[in-house]
Length: 526
Image (cartoon, rainbow, N blue to C red):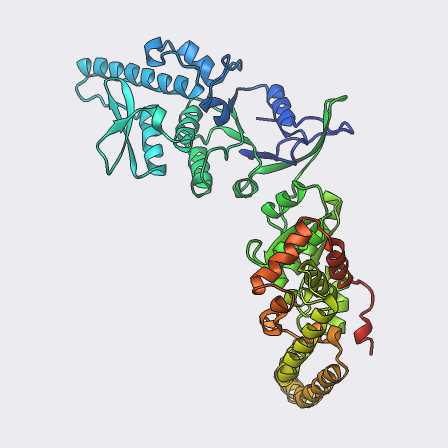
């Protein structure tokens, strides 16, 4: 079936690629996704069929008016009214049709037996519904008694009607049964396929339904980005906006191949903001809690490792002609030197002037703001924190110098080993000379001298730049010195100040953003 998508604002339009059996329509709230879907349905010349669990499970004043929906099918089915007494629910209409068709099939089977004792009853739509529904809910079973559909738990013999099913159980019943009644080779439109369904069954349910109706084309309009990204081989349409005056849209088709996942694209385009990729797990990490409150004009997306942040930023910026959005990344400085930092910053990867995220929470202005919020003397509090941190670093100097030396050696070897060698002998000679050239002990002694200088001059800011120590916050006693119980309370106070936009919020934001100066690192120009 050849399908043309609705017109764009400039008059152009796209058509559905050949052999595509799934379309996913996504976009921000208010962008015009539903209007786009309705327009697409109205323009299709063949059979269409629309499903909406929200409409099916709740009372309506009047039946839906679409020629191919469940209510129209019920009206044409000849099902007796006793099967659906005083109900306006589309789900009840569907169950009545299923039971009516089951009776017709049973009568036809008995008639066939009278002339052919070997006749066999073929699986009915009701059989398919029961089989798949019980597959989704293996602890439940469906019984057919005296022309009624009853339900029970496998651990309980007591049966009950469909009225006592959960919304999720009803929705699964509706989606399976209604899809079976879609006309052959039709286009099935599903509004919010995620409604009422637990994430654990969402994807697998629709995978099974699509297999059940291989003849049909499925069009999903969804807000569930994970579900949208799970529709493999789908044409995904990003609706940016709608123009009611011309009844046209600004939309585009997602690139079919990219190293970014579709979920990533959908997360970004749904927010209509520049995107900032960060490290962390998106739930528990300090990064994912702090950065959205600091960089409020960005959609902040946590990816996990620094390598994923770097790759996602590079790929997303390479596709700027598609999405027209700026993006950047943030990775911890860790033990990167000036050349590594400069390289990343040229690639729009923001690298702070402190070693890691915990160090940002130890910035002077952050400590002072927290102390002030707890009615402590911020000068005295910070001075004690400064002395405590310097004392910690003094004890860790040799271990920190060794870690920086290891990082430097590793990076140098990685860069130098990529050289071109014509034979194994050249490679061996190159490796033999590397140790002398790199001079690990010399590097180590240089780092020791540099770090001792920071201690001797009480250079708090440079210590934060080079000191990787996850236990820095509890070890420095900053929470107690600011009038708080522990590390968790200290972090929570910072986040509360930012989220409530209370006194000191801009002071903290300015301190954090100043850490991401994209210019030359003045501390490392030598």
